[in-house]
Amino acid sequence: MSQADRVSQHYAAPRSVAISRKQSLAPLVALIGCDGAGKTAISNELAIQLNQTRPTQAVYLGLGSGDLGRRIGSIPLIGPALEKLLTDKARKTRSKGEKIPGLLTALVVYGFSLLRYRRFLKMQDARRRGIAVIADRYPQTEIPAFYDGPGLSAARPGSRFVAALARSELRLYEKMAAVKPNLVIKLDVDPQTALSRKPDHDLATLTAKVVATQKLTFGGAPIVTIDARPSYAQVKEEVTKLCRPLFVEAV
Image (cartoon, rainbow, N blue to C red; front, side, top):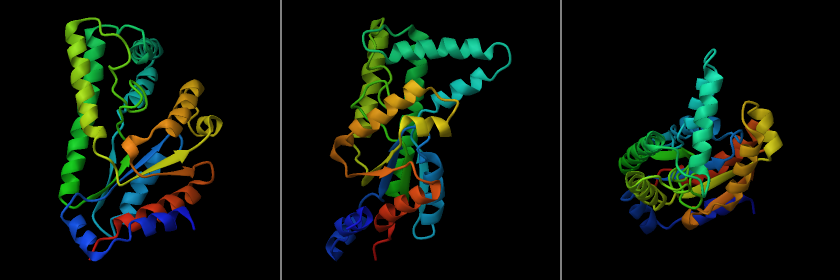
């Protein structure tokens, strides 16, 4: 029996369960994987495709800080130096035992987390209105300051105020992580393949993300792992087969 068949069988519910689903939140599928695994392209295309069956939308739940840093690095003359400065500060913030480098850095990290939390709340509101969601990335609390985890929970705070920010941020992530997706799809790809698709990324960071992808449990949510090394069309087809049983409107 294929993975798609097992998922379909698992969600083939009797009418009484189908009725209760109508009264609950719309389905949520999270696509997880290292950069270059195809999360963003697949989630956007799949949402358009499944929207023909029932209202569906793609939601980005990442921070976007990495892309912002690369855009800063492309600024003539000052870009590379500014990107290095920001990267060094971010690395210290993510490193256990290091000290968070200043209040401004903590406020920036906290601000990004607030933006993520706002997108999360908007996603939940859409689900309450019956709109199914395919999430590109998903917040977690298992690995601090990395891979969509709380950014201020690894390094040491340098002041009471920064410590309060870290506690507040952690509570936001705990609230988000407490909402389990109906299905988590891990797009598994090796670091070399990821680098070939994202040549502007750092190999060491990609390697760490590949390892983290395999470890995350998302609070016991249903998880299926897909080999994301084949062609985009093949991977998208397999993801579609897994999602379709969940996104069929209950009659």
